[in-house]
Amino acid sequence: MAEKKENVMAGFKAFLMRGNVIDLAVAVVIGAAFTNIVNSVVKGVINPLVGAFGTKDLESYQSCLKGPCQVDDAGNAVSGIPIMWGTVLSSILSFLITAAVVYFLMVLPMAKILAKRAAHDKAKEGVAETMEISELEVLKEIRDHLVSQRGPSTGTGTGAGTGGGSGTGGGSGAHPTS
Image (cartoon, rainbow, N blue to C red; front, side, top):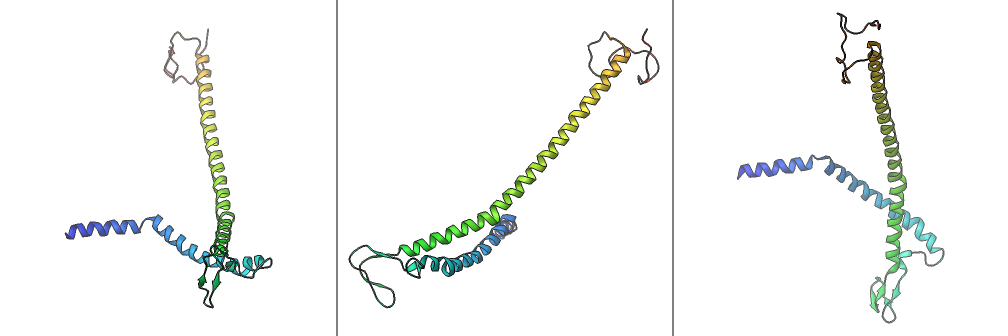
């Protein structure tokens, strides 16, 4: 039983130490703080701007579904069924502002940075590939030059060591062809 408990605790510790869990916790905390800022902007700026065309409080917009709606001093419906569409509109505006700020201040700049990094990595890869190709071409030219210095060979080989050079040199000197 103690061994099973140790395995569970070890698994839990491994779960907590993952980078994703910590990143998620930070995101939740920042998101909660950011939500307060957005709600303040909606209530302090957006609602008064909308209120310039109607009531000062966006959340007070409502319609009555059944009969005349009557509300007591505490804000509770006494008769009728009120539809609080102003609250929904306020929440939608909060969401849109949050989404716009996250997109324009976080997602878009990060996408540009990642695109630049990908282009840089691709350019680096292209240079390395070009160097490999040009190095291979130089080696082929050297091989062809050495083969042409030896003279025509009767073999069908394509690499070093083919052909019939006689002598004691390593094959780097010029052979007279006569």
